[in-house]
Length: 222
Image (cartoon, rainbow, N blue to C red; front, side):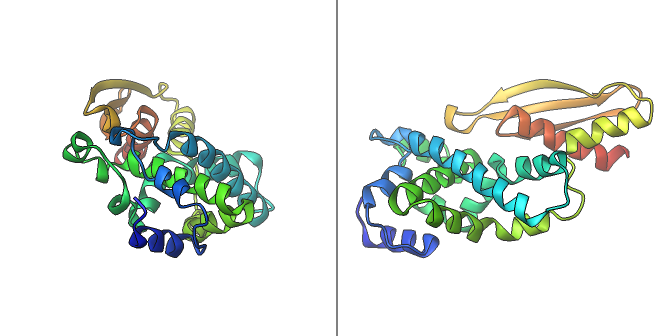
C-alpha cells in the first residue's frame, strides 16, 4: 500500500511528510493481513507515549504530588483513550485487515484502534525523531490533558477510599464472561460491595472493565 491518499493522511495527522512510507504501512497493518504487522511499532509507541505524557504532566502541573500525576498518566495512556484519539483522526479507514478481521468488525475495535495509534507514534519517532513524536502526541492529546484538571482520581482508587471512609467491605471484582474474537475480546466484570449493591461492566480488557464498573458503582451508590 503506497497510495497517495494514505500518505496524504499521514502528513495531515502528523504535520510531517513521510520520508519512510513503509514504516506507516507497517503501523497500519494488522496481524490478520498476512504481512509484517504493527506489534513492534506498538511496543515502541506505547513507551514514547508514556514518556511524553509524563513529561508534559510534570511541567503542566508543578504543584501536584506523584500520586495525582500517576492517576492522570494512567488515564491518558489507557487503551480506551488511545482508541478514541485514533477514532477521531480516522485511523479505522486506513487499517490493513484480513477478511476475517474485517468481517468481525476489527476496523471499529477500540483495542485495534488504540494499538494502531501507538504504532503510528512509533513510526513518527523512527521517521522524524523524538520532537516530531512529541508534537504528534501533544497535538492529539492536548485537550485531554487540560481536561483532567478536575477530580482525576482513578475510579477504583476513589471507590476504595469511599469504602474505607464509610466502614464498608473491600470492593470485590469478578470476571463473569470473556467473549469475542481474539483481536476484539470483551470482558464482563461484576463489582460488588457487601450490603450495598453490585454493578456489571464490559470492556476490551479486565482492567478497563473493572475501572468502568467502579465508575458506574460510584455514580449509582455514592
